[in-house]
Image (cartoon, rainbow, N blue to C red):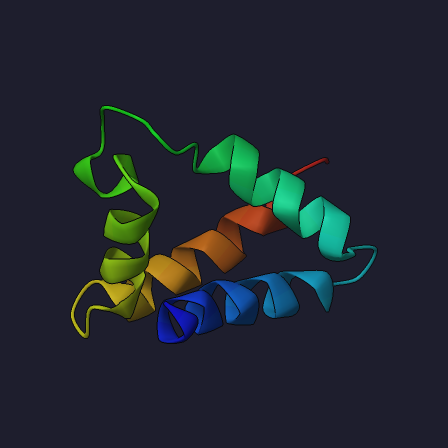
Length: 76
C-alpha cells in the first residue's frame, strides 16, 4: 500500500508546486476530475485500479502528464 500511495503523493506534490496551487487545491482537483468510484472509465472504478493505471509503464507516464496539463485550465 505504501508504494501505491507514493504515486498519489508525487502527483499531489507536483500539482501543489504549480503557481497559486496548494495541497488542498490539488486534492480538490483530483477529487473532482477523477472521482472514485466511477463506472467509466474502468481505471476509476476503485482507488487501486486508478493507482495501478498510474503505475503502469505504458499508461502511467502519459496519464500523469495529462493530469498535470489539464490542471492548467482548472479554476480558470
